[in-house]
Length: 347
Image (cartoon, rainbow, N blue to C red; front, side, top):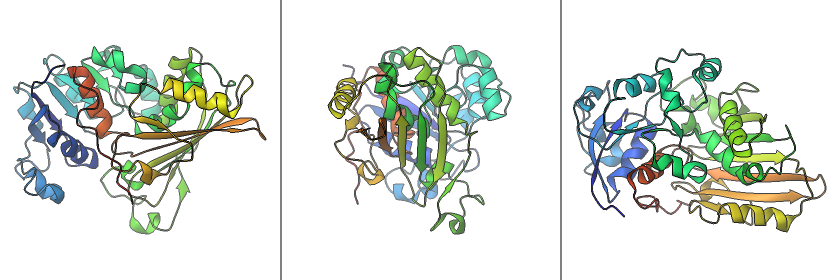
């Protein structure tokens, strides 16, 4: 196992994901953060944007152009959709490996991307190079990749909630319904009418009904897993909490099922996946808060003859920053748990 120190850059560190990446990487035993960038805050200390880092990470923020000539092992792109693609294109010939936390390379083709994101894609050749970075499904591919499309937070929880079922072809066609709920940080750091305190506090709403862009991401990955075209019903909701995602998935099995068989399927599928914990009771978002864990509870409802699977993650970590670090560990040949052993913060 390699024990070298690797140089990394975090491009776009003003948001929640950039902050969480910095928190994880600053404590990683094999990593040196060489550069942290922000176009609008260059020249300021990182801790001026994120005061929790005072006297811990006071590194000066730089323009992204510093990366052009820097010798780096990993570049993390914590940038918005539609912006990341420009930097992947710009740095495609560098020796550095790139982990993109946006949605710009998560889908199967530029045509699918443009249909769901309503944006033109400026680096279409990247789709042939990018690996979807969900380590529980794609670890071997991640190890050999130079461009990782880090999964979305909703798709991470949704896919992991039902992956064992689709891998074994146990689900009736078109029967999967996913009801997902996210804390406010899933909407990003910029304030909007939707994220205004008066709209979020003491409130609860569905959005993106029938058209949310993560729908196709989930469908494509489950289709790849099962070898069949998958169509789902996906509805996201915003809850008055800072962070966390809770997914409840419903599906009809295509063969005889019982509780023991269902748990055996999940335990066997995740037995060598250290960050997925199969639970005997339904998880809550506080059970995983501040950690890289995904807690999953499969339940067989014999009355309705449906499988109900509940998954909980921290959207900023397993759904973004720690997923990226997990991918980095695999790409660099490090122990996959390195720097990711945080115990969930509860209460």
